[in-house]
Length: 224
Image 1 (cartoon, helix red, strand yellow):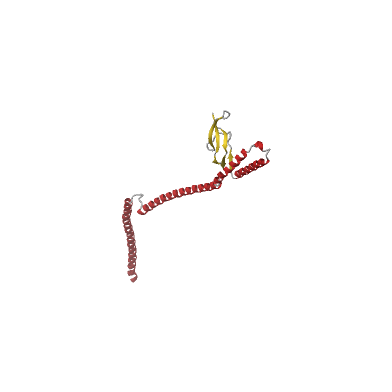
Image 2 (cartoon, helix red, strand yellow; image 1 turned 60 degrees about the vertical axis):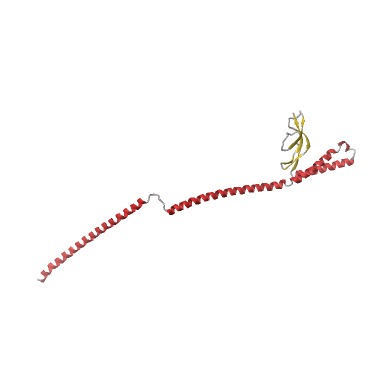
């Protein structure tokens, strides 16, 4: 009798448990659905807000910091170009100055004796005039005169060798075309055997020091 009374109670318990499980599952599903709807509702305003911000900020717009850095970079590039140009100009000027100084030093070494050579030229001219003034026909009959003539000639030859050793050479332009850079015309002379403006007479030899004329030759020039 007691077993029969307990059987309905067990059946009711099992059904109540099944009903409770079903209700719980339905509640869980409802909660999930509500959560999804809430997430979707919150996300949409955020996306709208992001779209609005993107619409407000135009494409390609830079921040003030970027603009400032861009301007500073442009100014630095311009200053660098200016300094580079000044450096190149200064380098070229220093190179030109160095070349000029080297040339001046070289010229000073070569032509430093120019004034001294001009003074010695008068000595050479005097010796030349002295040997030319000796009558050649009297040399054989006068031993003293011959010795004097030979001594003067040897002295003049030795002096010319010293001149040559130091780059000083005489200019004897006889029968050459007149050159105003090397010759100084004192007079003109008629001479049909040569062309016009030809040196036909040399009254004083010229000299050049290392291809630089330090004294022009005094000459007479032919004319038609």
